[in-house]
Image (cartoon, rainbow, N blue to C red):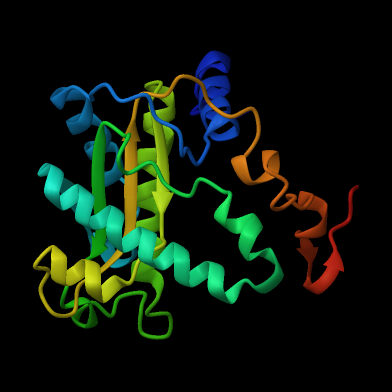
Length: 219
């Protein structure tokens, strides 16, 4: 093992955070201390980004009326999504898809404006700005789990409507509504698995060797 590796206890904690991270929908109110929220956002800001563009922008929603308006946008999209799900629409409507009204903190994460000026690593893959933002959210997610807080990523909203609600500049784009706060317990398994909506696939089905579709050798 590399001499640069963490201790066994530290490595176990990292892997535990990843294994026990859950997309939470059930929150127990409470609050997140300002210094803890700052620590979590700093963890997010330490994420890797292509060309060091740091495309993420975090908007903390403090006004109750604004939180309620965001809830309304999510509810509108929930209804529209149900309409296109056909025979699964009723099943979908039984799922709890957000915790906006119950979580201690509500954050909107967006891509900044002017991203076209950043070409390092994005000339052929412009979507790497989104990949970078996702890394920041994952950092925040894992740090929150380590701190005993739940986090849920809500993507059921019309981006332009949310951008207008938050007075965002042209070219920016909101991509996540994050519900953050204390929870009574973490799900034993992903909620969509518990609810029978979907089943995860085994890693062995998703790892190929040398070319697409060729399973990697186990030896």
